[in-house]
Amino acid sequence: MTEPLESLVTTEMSFGKYKGTLIADLPGNYLGWFAREGFPPGRLGRQLALMYEIDHNDLKHLLQPLRQRRGA
Image: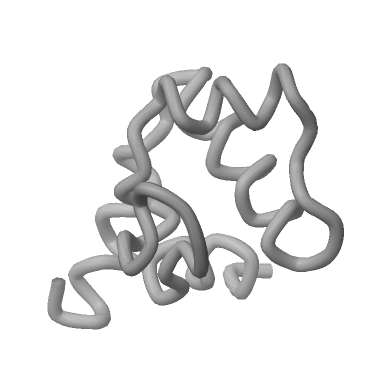
């Protein structure tokens, strides 16, 4: 069940101001904007929604072991 979380530390934002930034590194205000305006469809939208929940609930520390596994 770690695949959705692992994808946050391996997938880069594919468009916009933060293109090339890992989903896990997107700022909270950007994730909040998506939460208000609507997440894009598909996998990216699910990843952004998950990251929003993690950020909003101050759970980013849960991603640290996954970052360490990939050497980040």
